[in-house]
Length: 110
Image (cartoon, rainbow, N blue to C red):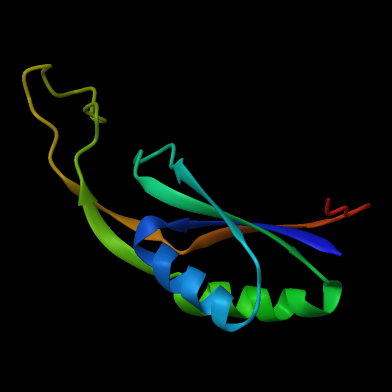
C-alpha cells in the first residue's frame, strides 16, 4: 500500500477531485497555501494499493496544468535601485502538481 500526497493549484482542484471520483479513488482534500506566491493550493491525501498508484499519477498529471501568471515581488530584487522605486510585475510559472508517494507500513479503518 502507498500514501500519495498531491499538492495542486486550486484552479485544478475540482477537476482532479471529479476525476478521482470517476476512477473510484478516495481522496481527502485539505486547503493549503504556497510559500512563494502565497496562493491557494489543495493537498490531496490518498491511500492506494500499489497496483493503482500509476493510475492515480496519470490522473494527476493529466488534470494539473502549469500556467504563466504575473505577480509583483514583495521586495525589490535589484538592490541598486532606490527604495522609492516600485517593483514591476514579473511573469512566473505556477500550477502543475507536486506529488509524494510513500510506503505505508500499516493501514487501519475503524
